[in-house]
Length: 316
Image (cartoon, rainbow, N blue to C red; front, side, top):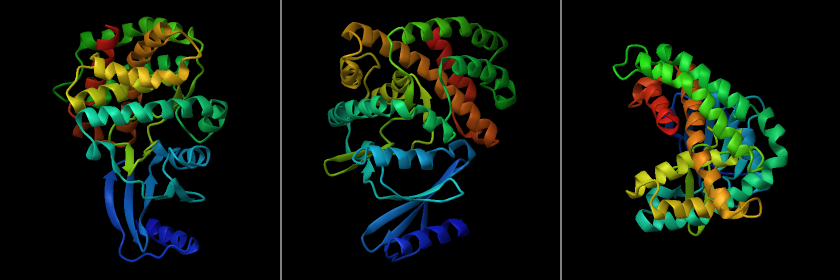
């Protein structure tokens, strides 16, 4: 933290940003930490990422350059560490809006996010070169098999670990997942960037401006896998069923920028496939974090087994 503070002070000085008080550590996780830096013109933040999120600073910087009104402003990148200095983005979406207003905000930002996914597609190899996880079809299949094999070691003696029957069921998902991936690929939409953790706490609001941040769980996959998190969290936050008309309206708002690629019915079917397959990607992220930072999975209700059970629900 002393090194991070010294770097933040150096960067602010080079940018003629006057720091007016002590830095405050406002976010601490095993995989990242964030410090608030008070300045004469409001706050800026320094984020230090761990190895599982090392791609986040260069990826965020790329996205800010290409989509400056939609992604957090990056002020500086550390030359050797996965650290970045970013501007204040506002309050979290879920703190500003609730109920119907939250749904309205999602209907506004989801088409913008989908257009980002479309426009960034030619940069896929560059994004992977940052260390962004590759969750394209074959890697996703292999990843699920690996997660299933790792589950006993990750879950340890937790009372909610998978049963032997559930573990066998996870291994049997492989063929059904492959069929779903083939059906999704048949729509003809290319793999691209997927935020993969896009919910109400990862969008910032300031006035009428909304920006997406926290790209630490991002991956390269079929874009529609993003819907697994977004629709599930929007439903939970607003008390709606995942297949209610209000939540499906969010799906349709997201799909609108893809309307030249397939019919409405085909896109909706593909979105449902993406929502189901996306739970596999989330499980791979959970497994990677659990193995990189021992003990972290113990702090999550359900643990890795709970994540795998969601996969079983989708493909059982």
